[in-house]
Every structure is written in C-alpha cells, then in structure tokens.
Image 1 (cartoon, rainbow, N blue to C red):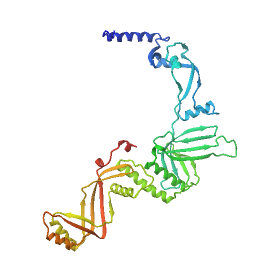
Image 2 (cartoon, one colour):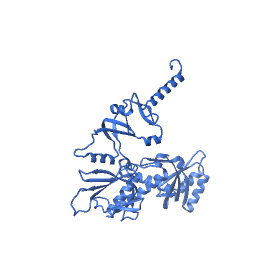
Image 3 (cartoon, rainbow, N blue to C red):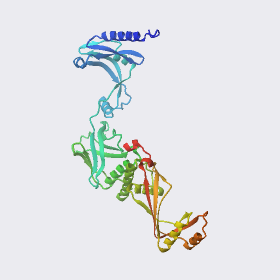
Image 4 (tube, rainbow, N blue to C red):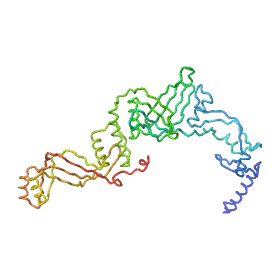
Length: 422
C-alpha cells in the first residue's frame, strides 16, 4: 500500500491490527495490550482501562532473582549490603531467574509480554528507595563573635559499616556546598556498659570543585579560627530551631594563629564583596604578589568610591601653547599648584583570573612646583608656534597624588550570568 501511495489505507490497516492485538488480552476489556519496542522487537505491556481498574485489579509480579552486583564486600551480609547501597542511593544489579505476572487473582501467561522478553534480553536492577529528607542545619561556635561557621548544610547518614562499627553523617550529597563536612561515629557496637559515649571524628575540607574559591576559603578559615579558640562546635536544626549535637574539637596542630587568620579573613571578605560588586569569580593563588595587592587596592577603591593616595615623583608635561603656561608659571611663583586631569587611557585589570576592563582614571595632584621656572620663562619669551615646551614638575611638601578609578559595570566587567547565580 505504501509503495503504491496508499498511505492512509496503510495507516488504517495498522490501526486495525493494533486494535485486534489490544482485544486479545485475557482480561479484556479491563486490560488491553499496548505494543512497545524492546530493542528490535515489538512486545506488549498490560494497560488498565482506567485508574479504578488498576486499583481494583493491580498488577503484581512474583519470581526469583539472585544478586550479581560485584560491589558486595567480603564478610558483608545481604542486609548490610542493601543498607549501604540504599544510603549511597546506588542501584543493585540482579539476575532474574523467572517472573510470573498476576492481575488480581489471574496468572497471565504470555511469551510476548514485555516482562518475559526482558528476562532474556534486559539488564535488571533493584533501584533504591528515596532517602528521607535531610536535616537542614547550621554549624556554629561558642567562641567567636560572628559565631556562624556554615549557615546551611543538608546532613544525611551516608555510611553504615557494622563490620568496622562506624557510621557517617555528612553533607556529601549537597554538591553545591563549598565544603564537605562529616561526623564519623566509631565504636557503635561497644558492649561495655561503663562506656556511654561515642568516639567521634569531625572532618572538614574544601570540595575539589570549590578549591581556590573565595567562599570556600572563608568557611574553612572560620572553622579553623573556631578550632584555635577551643570553642564548642554546635549543630543546630534550622527547621526545628534546636541544637542536636555539641562537641569540643581537639586542639589543632597548625602553624596559623588567630591574628594571621583574622587578617586573611578580612582580605577574603573584601574579595567576596568585590565578586558580588563586579559580578566575577576569583581563583585564588597560593601567594599574593605585590602587583596583586596594588590591583586589589584599586578594585576596593572603586567599590567604596574612594581615591587611591600615593606619593609623587618628578614628572614631565608638554605644552604647545604659551598662554596657559604663562599663567601656570606666574601662579607657581606665588603658591604651590594643584592639578586635576582625566586620563585618556583606560586600565584593564586581571586579578586572580577575573577581568575588569575599561577602568577610567582621574588624577588630582596637590602641592607641585615647576622645576627651573626662570628657564621656562626664557623658553616662553623665545617661543615659536611650531615648537612645544617641555616642563618638569617636582613635588612640594605634601607630595600627594590622588587617583580616582571608576568603571562602567555594564561595559567594563565580563558579564557571566552563571557565575553571578552561583
């Protein structure tokens, strides 16, 4: 029919065939067969007439299978294995020996059904039941002014090992958290009645995907600061508003002291504000160079709308006319000069991998003097319109150069919506 151009007739013929297939189901009209593909084959699924039929005559399967998953560990019981896979939300590979299909009280025997063909040609897995909702918590310390270390975590049981008698609670599943936090409970099976507490290891590290980011290092150093101060660590349930864990970490063996940590945190908090202001993300180096500190100072000045004040060395300026130069020389003889100017050039700043382009600069120079004013006067007297006069200025007692930097955030910053949203 298709070759002869009778496409509609062919479609009608197909529809009639499928209708006949639907009606040969043993429980028709309550159930029909629905053709579906399995690899290169056409097989049939059981389709209830409606939701009420599905509820009154539910489909059930009976059979036998064996676990063939290669992840089972030596000495691990089936229950321990399944518990571990459930906690980690991992599927378990199985080998289905046979399967029976029951609808209500009737056993359905059909070699063309989906389930019978899937035994021979499909891979079978047990899928883990969803985990319960995580505990939404924050980690705080009792010894720091701003005592919040991590303002939001999602904690779950992520490991249970009865052989080693340990359990782990962590935020391992919270992939958007900059840090990986975990509590390892040891000696769970201790039968000594005189011991009524657990040994607990508290682990805290920056996730690999967040290494060298500003926020991750702020959290890490805040945790380090709290540990140095020997304050208690408290986990608080954000939804219930109650504390459910408190411990005092052991004294850390570290080269950091509180002052060093505070100085680093101050710098990092400024960088965090810059990331938000300029819509960028920094990739922190091992050490900051002098040039990095200079760029940092400029960006901070832009953000705070302040000037960068530095000392001033001798500098030169050229004049192609004498009217303004005459007034300048006359003024310089009576008092120190103040000059303001806008730079025609723009500055491009690359700090820790973030680009801030088209930075404008304007200068204010206070208390400068003309070097050899008499010599300049002589040049003015002999001035020819085709010439230019070069004037050297020297700093006065104040020796102050103020530079105001500014940037058009729409044009000067590399816009990155993904980074901003993170």
